[in-house]
Length: 158
Image (tube, rainbow, N blue to C red):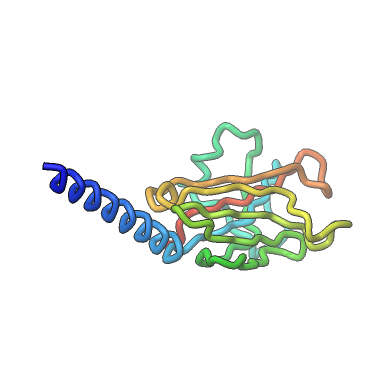
């Protein structure tokens, strides 16, 4: 009887280990899409290359105060064990790191700040939530324009 319970414990242990390894592998296979978005009350973007935010993502920020959300730039990247740097603008860069256990760390930097190596914001994201269609939004006030804001949307790029 004891050998049967030991065997079942080993089976459960092995199953848990395999599940953890698969979660790690799936997180590194995940493609992330990062979009630098400008929240403003201006009626039109200053640059014709800027695009309006997709309606599905716009719905996620409907409670915020701005009339328009304009995508300044976007990039797609996969998380890696070593931080990957992604440039979204001359004043917005990200690092994306696979922390393991289905967690991804995203840090936002301003390369032109007094201390460019210190993150403006850091957030740990759940890979499985991203795969389910959740969006993570990190934002702050614009330093250039009163009443405007910057937002970085992180979604699954798949």
